[in-house]
Structure formats: C-alpha cells, structure tokens
Image 1 (cartoon, rainbow, N blue to C red):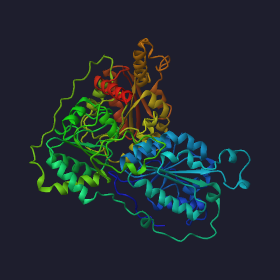
Image 2: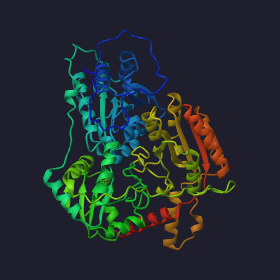
Image 3: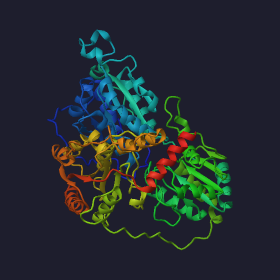
Image 4: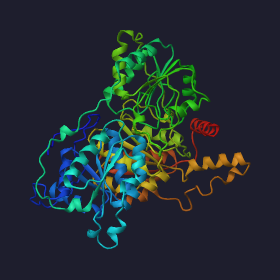
Length: 612
C-alpha cells in the first residue's frame, strides 16, 4: 500500500502531525508484512494517513487491535483509549470539526455501537466525517463461542445506524475489507460529509491470508470531488446579487479554511451585502465586521428577522434550517432566494434533520466555498465601490462586581478579560451562551455546536478539537453546561492520558435549565404554578463538585467559583496549567437563567413551531 497522503485537502490544521502523547510503545514484533485480515485493514488505515483511532476496546475487534499494536507499532494510526464509545466517536467528531478530515474510531460489536449512537447522530447532523470501524462475533455460527459471541452478533448490525450514516458495509474477505475502508474514507470526506461504518467479521479479521494481496496506491482510490457550480447558475446568481439594493448573505455549513473565509468577506464587500451567522455551526464571517448583523445566535434574532424583511435578495450558503428561519418571520420573505447546498444529496425518510422546506427561487447544487469563489470571478468589475475598512468596535463590558453572583454573561465576561489577547478556539458553548459574549475573527475562533442536540457531546468533541489544535498556539476552551459535562466527562481522562491541553469551563447552573424553561411555558399555557418548574430539573442536594470529577481523572480542577473574583483567580490558574500542556476544569457557578435576547429568540422559535 502507498503511504502517500490522500483525500480532500480542506484542513486548516495539519491532519498528519502526531500530536498525542505518550505514544504507548509496544515491544517490537518484527512483523513487516500483512499476515492476517486485520493486518490488511490496519495497513489500509496507514496508507490513508489516518493519524489516530479513538476506541473503547472489545473482543469483537481483537484482531484489529492486535494489528494496530503489533503490526503497525501503535503509530499511524495511534490508539486513543477512551472510557466510553460515545467519547470515542465524539473525539473523532471534534477532530473533524477542526481539520475537515476524518479520523478513525472503533466500537465493540453491537453493544459498543449502541453506546456510540448519540455521538454518531451528532456527527451526522453536523455533517462531519468519521471512519467508524465495528465488528461482529463470527458470522459463521459454527465458529461462535457459546453465549457471548451469540449475543454480540446481529444479522444486520449496520441497520442500527444506517439512517444516520452516509454508508455502511460488512466485507466478507480481507480484499473486500481493504476496498471497503478505501470507499468509506472517500465517501466520508466528500461533501456533504458524514460518518461511515464498517462492520468487520471476527473471522475475516483473524483469518490468515492465503496469499498476499496485490499492492495498490491508495491515492488512486481517493479521487477529489469538487462539486462546483455551473457557469450559467453562477451568472444568474451574480446578476441577481449585483442588481440587488439590499442583499443579505447567510453563510452556514462552510469550511474552516482561511482562504475561503477571506473570500466570503470579499464577496460581502463586493456586494455591500449584510451578513448573518449562526451558533449552530462554526464561525463563518467576522462578527465585528461592519456588514455583520448583530450577533450569531442559535435561533432567529430580531436583527436577522428585520434584515430578511428588508432584503431584496437573500443568498444562503447551506444555512442550517433555512425554512425554519423564514418561518420565524411568519411567512416566506418577499426577497428573491438563492440557495447553495449539496445537503439534499443525503436526505432520507427516517431523520428529519433536513428541517423545513424553504422557498427558493434559484438553487445551486454545489459546494458553498467553491460557489463563493466562482461568484467573485463572475462579479469582477461589477463589484460595488470598496468602502473604507472599518471594524465595528464594541468596548468590552466592565468586569462584574467581585463578590456578585454570576449570570452566563458575567461568566463569559470574566473569561474574556482573563484570556486577553490570546488566540482562542471555542470548541463548544453551553445553551446559556449568547453570540454577543465573544467576537469571531477567524474560522477557528469557534467550531460550532454538537450538531444533533445530544447533551453529553461537548467534552468529547472538545478533546478531539484540542487534539487537532495541539501545536497551533491556539488555546482550546470548552464551555459546557453542567449536565453536558457530567454525561461526557470521562473524555477528560483521555485528554489527560495523552497530554492534550484543554480548558473546560463548566457553566454550572445546577439545573437542566432548558427544560425548566419548557416547563414554565407549559405551566403558563395551562394556568398552573410556574413555581414548580424546577422539580425534576435541579441538579442539587447535593451539588456535584465538578472540580473533583476532573481531579479524579488526573486533570486540574478549580472551584467552585461562586463570584467573579473567585472565577478570575481560578481561570488565571487554569490557563497557566493549559499553557503548560495540562488539562484544567473550572467549576463556574452561575444563576439558572438565559440572557434576555436568548430567551426572546427561544420563545419566538417555540411560537413558530406551535403555529406550524
């Protein structure tokens, strides 16, 4: 197999730098040629230049485990041991959010796959690539061990996740397994990206090769697919946009590529178009640019709704839930709508993550980054006169009173003051976070949410993102809710064990507060006491000591910080730990509340849903 790099080059960070430590070095086995089916699979992973495979071990893929350790020497890919399959897949998800490229994850049989399903669904909804390897106890019933192999074997294991993966396979020979891994990696990395799954029969893994497979060059099986727009559609879109008096651009699922980011800025300036962004996906446009509207938010804001009503042309660059955003207005906008997306290629009848059907006047089935580049070329001399370069300066709010209780905004304010001028990547933010808390000036300033709304994804995704960011000089910061942290906190052990620097700030309101908000709405609608909304929601009596959960896994734990002064001290110490290569968790005790803007947007979304 060739070891030359292959696959789409969308990464903003090198996908090949092996930055996890310590590499658990096995005793050399002297093996230098594939002898078993699982050796072929491992060799193919190396040929694809996959640096890591996150996993929770299991007997169903013991052959592959052995091949990675004793055939590959636990390097390229290097194993990342995880304490739960959901963490293993979430780490691969976070790595892809930074690099735009799939790493591998392995899960044990049907039981491990069941554990991993939420993380796989998150990656699916987030359109992020992951190569997931699973296994089954021998398909040949005569070769199954009593009891355990039977309960770990399914007639169609891929059916468990087929509705929220791009592709799955169960190859029946070593040669078929090699082809399956090649196809899966290629499919995962091409737009629209997504997770793929290969189920490896234990007998295929452990069977000896009758003869060596013929060598192949992996690059030739990874043809780059650039789904560019047609010249005719680009011309039509360019004519509409240049003729518009009040154009609006809605960038959604776009890459972390800095050149693509700069081209979006150039396009907006060439059209004098206003731009809105969204917290559901990564940073797509500088939020302090004078053309940016308000602040990025998860739900439609008053600023965005007003801009859509005023616009005469609206162009979506794969905006997440375009139909729902229009619905928040009460009806489809009068503007001419241009939609640029490839997402329709993977819509199915099981998952409704494709959202509501939007009104569209010109549809361009193409990659948004490629389309922006083509539009810039088509507009050319028709660009509007360039205005003086201005930055929408906004003074940082004053620090909250040292001994005051903190809302989410106060917590974010203290964090911003302590971070200062450091380059930061927000790897995750809590539901209480508002876009006004932080400015985004680079595609890696913020990498988006968990994708599928799966509570518990934040810690694992952040560990994977921090792994990809290691060595870049960026400080990875995860802001996780207390419920999110508790569900996924075992990912912290993996970060500590492999020396992956990461700061986790737990926005600890001691409640599943989003559901308190829902119970209040129901109580109001039914004329029942809102005072009872906390029952079955509050995480107290006893309060959970988040710092102790961190210290139990070898991380540095700080807090609880009950006021701004305590939080400032804890954050300064925690950042020093992370900058020295460590993992730190800060327990920030905040009030159970949302900012007025967040609460209003959520209420509007709830009203629109009920109206529909």
